[in-house]
Amino acid sequence: ALQGRLAQLPVQDLVQEGVIGLLKAADRYDPSRGIRFSTYAALWVRSAVQRSLKRTPAQRAPWNQGHAVLGRVFDALEAERLRLLKQW
Image 1 (cartoon, rainbow, N blue to C red):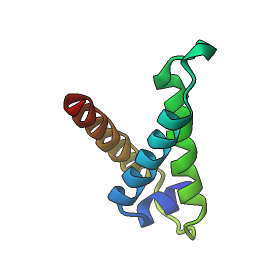
Image 2 (cartoon, rainbow, N blue to C red):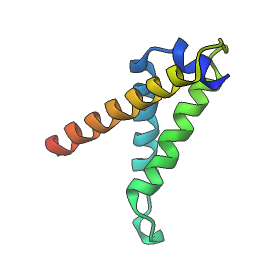
Image 3 (cartoon, one colour):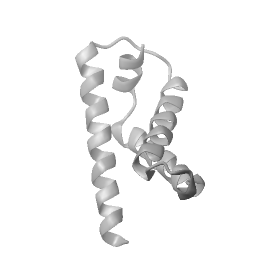
Image 4 (tube, rainbow, N blue to C red):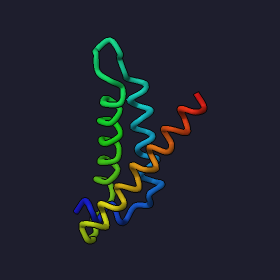
């Protein structure tokens, strides 16, 4: 069912959900806990994207198609992260 939802949502919507998760991670991160930010943020990004997918009605799609879309989402998130790092 996950692959069907991935195929149905535009990549930019998933990227936006990932950015929202990243912003939540940045807001709630506590460096005194001894956890690397990248590890902490990955949990929030994954959670935000999965929540978005659960709100989307399922539609059947080939397994590899969903995998490809998810790969593009993570590539776009990485590009956005690098862009933001350059600005900062």
